[in-house]
Length: 129
Image (cartoon, rainbow, N blue to C red; front, side, top):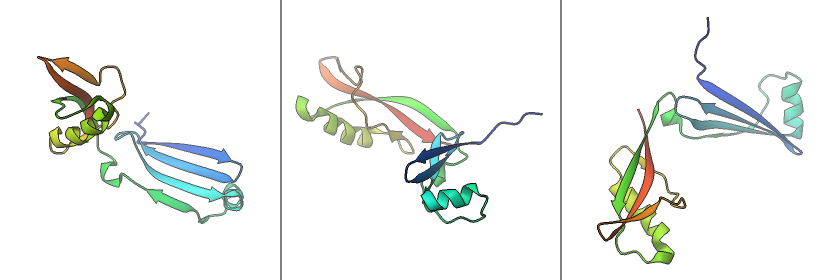
C-alpha cells in the first residue's frame, strides 16, 4: 500500500561539509536547513547519533498547509520607468488581499501592461490553508 510522502530531503556535499535541506511537499516550503562542517559530516555518516550541527528553521507556520495561488492585477500609480519595479512591489503589498503574499518579482514580460490608458502590474499571490 502506497501513501503520500509529506516531505522531501536533499543532501548537498561541499568541500567544507554537508548541507541537508528538508522541504514540506504540501506547502512547497523549505523549513529546515542543517549545515555540518567536514568533521561533523564524517561523524554523521559514521552513524554517530545526535551529531551537532548548525540549524536554521523557517516557514514553520506553513508546514502541512496547502499552497493556493492566484493572480493580482493592480494599477501602478506615481511611477517612473526606472523605479517601477520598486513601486510595484510596494503597491502589490498594499493591494494584496489579507492572508495572501505577493511575489516581488516583476521581471517577466507580462508583469506590466496598459489597460484603458492606465499602467498596471500583474503578479502571482500565494496563501497557505
